[in-house]
Image (cartoon, rainbow, N blue to C red):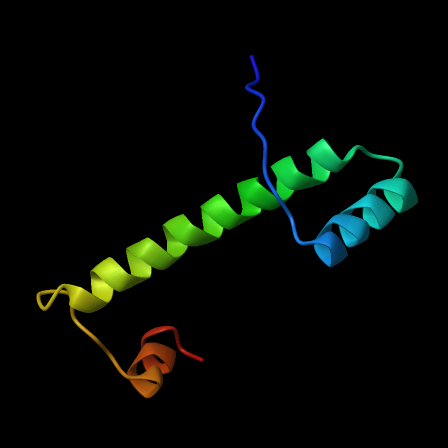
Length: 72
């Protein structure tokens, strides 16, 4: 099931989206959906990183220590 939404884009971005859609023979909706999927995954990764940075019980090790642990 899908849900329709409406967004307003700056004209240059809308033209760029239309151009990419034509080049790839995919709909604008397809590209917007894929962009949102990527953004949401990146946002989740960022939130995990921020949470770990704020967790004072999560040990921080140096790059050198990491390489030694991985035998690099």
